Structures are given as C-alpha cells and as structure tokens.
Length: 309
Image 1 (cartoon, rainbow, N blue to C red):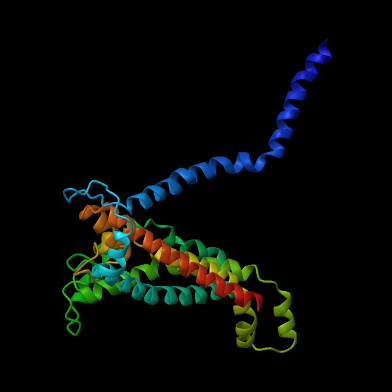
Image 2 (image 1 turned 90 degrees about the horizontal axis):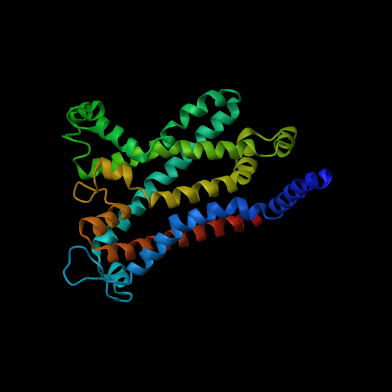
C-alpha cells in the first residue's frame, strides 16, 4: 500500500515532465507571442482600420465614417508637406547612415586588431546607444543652447559663422540633428561589426598571409566579403530605426525651425495629435511602413544574391 502511494506522485511528476518536454516551445514562446500580439498586432490592426475612416478630434462631422482610400490618395498625391518630410527623411538617411557605417567599421576594425584593449573600450563606446533617445535629446539641447550651452555659446561667437543659435537656424539645426544621430548610433555599427569580425574563420586569413597577400588586399578580398551578412543586418536595423527617429528630434527642435528637421515621424505626430486627424495620421503611418518594408526587402534580396554569388 505504501509502495502504491509513493508511485502516485512519481508518475504524476513524470507525466508532467514528459508533457513539458513535448510542448516546451509552445510553453516558452506562447506568453511572448501573446504579449507581442497584444502590444504590436492589435494596435496596428486598429490603426489600419482607422486609416480607412475620416475620424478626427478637431474637424466637426468627422466621426469615423468609411472613406476608402481617400486618406492614402491624399498622402500620395496632395499633401506637399508630407512629400517634403519624405524628401528630408531621405536626405537625413543619406547624411547619417553611410557615415555611421564607415565610422563604425573603422572603430570595429581598430578594436579587432587591438586585441584585449577592446574589452576596456567597448563598454565606454556603447554608452551613447544605451541612453534613451529623450535623454540624448536633452543632453545635446543643453550643450547646443545658444545662451548657456558650452558648444552653442562658443560657436555663436565665431565672427565668420554669424550664427546666433545652432538650433534656431534651419541649416544648422538640421546639421545638429545629423551630428547627434551619428554620435548616438555609430557605436551600434561598431558593436555589431566587431561581433561579426570576431566570428570570422581564421583559416582564410592564415592562408592569405602564407601566400604573401598584403593587409589591404586581405581586407578587400576576405574581410569585407565575409563581413557582408553582419553589415546587412546592421544596415537593415538602422534603416528601419531611422524612420522612427522621433524622441530626440522632438526634444531638440520639435521639427523646426521652419520644418527644417520635420522628418516623417515628427510630421505624423503633428498630423495625428496637434491637428487631431488621427485617421489621416494612421494612413501616413501605413504608407511609411510600406516604404520601410519594400526598402528592407530590396536591400536584403540584393545582399542575399551577393552572398550566393
């Protein structure tokens, strides 16, 4: 009788362990997928539904009636301010992404060749990208302020520049936003590419050295081709994130002066919450999402074709 009592709990625990082994993936990923569904898929579905309506907080009579693709046609064909923000977004990408990539690659190669020094330098290097974007915006707003910011104070007193305030002039405000973005996200490329460099196989490099290949030839014929997957991943992540640059730009300039730093994310916020046109803001957001999607697919398809060749 006692033996039967002992076998009961043992068999129950055994069945539970077998069930957990068989369904481990569902048990582990189920809560995460559920949370992602609630946090991402549901809001996107609501936004997609709103984009086909005329819902507005400020305009009378716009109570959410169905308007079809009217909001999308307005964004594609009529809204000049949206087109200007897209053009500015492209300029922002051209100014930031290549420089962040090149500086990050240069830093990563330097740390890779330095050996043990990278372990001490890497934590300090990663600080800018670990800071919250709002914090980065506040720090640089204080530094660039024309009256009490140290950088803004001395720059405004250079006679040849004739700048009263870095963030108060359209040209310098945009350059300041570009500089701050490069400062924050260059370490991201450095960290990702350094991890890619450490994962490269050593045998091809040893064989190239035995054959007498120069360092520059090894770099262009071995290092860069083998590093392309890491480069592609880093560029894809930053390409998507660049379209979401809102926090620090909003803190730095609020999209001004004169819409000089009004990227698509800032414009979407202005339309949705300052103008109250939530339905049109949703349509603009969907259009931006489609552009990011097709740009990412094109970049990944091109890179994948190069890997295969």
